[in-house]
Length: 174
Image 1 (cartoon, rainbow, N blue to C red):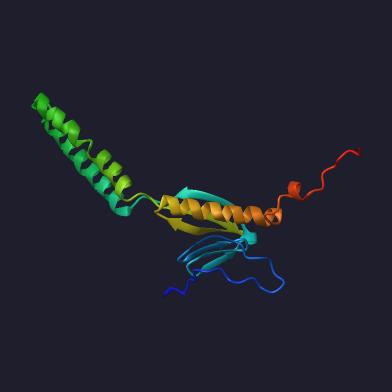
Image 2: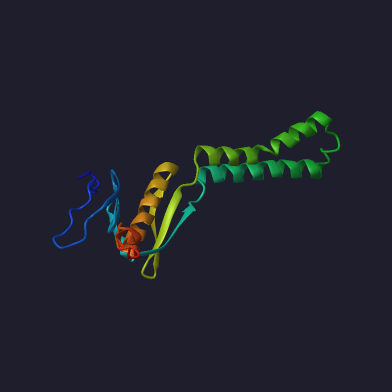
């Protein structure tokens, strides 16, 4: 058991219960055919509906940097416009001013690159929509969300067995 109380192994199946097929297991995250566990939160797969993924909000530091730079640069542009300073600028100064107006765009792109918004997996349990899982790692997020979707499919279709493979095909008499 980890210090945060999460186990890295799925619980053993109860006597007479369904077989616990492990679909994904990493420290703190377990997906079986019947349960989805993240940290100390556990959900029964049968209770989860309307699974969908989104991106979280932007990093607040990057958003504030873009906002502050936009306000400062816009204020400088307005002051130059009202004082008549724009008429006295040279061509190089206009180019420099145009480059400075790109600072908020560059800050937004850098903030999105260095601190991207997290990937979020949402689902409904009853009437309540809940955040089930969130991660900055795209690969881990994809693995967890695919495992949970497979668990939902297993639960809704009754297991892994292919119904066509188990069927006795009709053969003509010879």
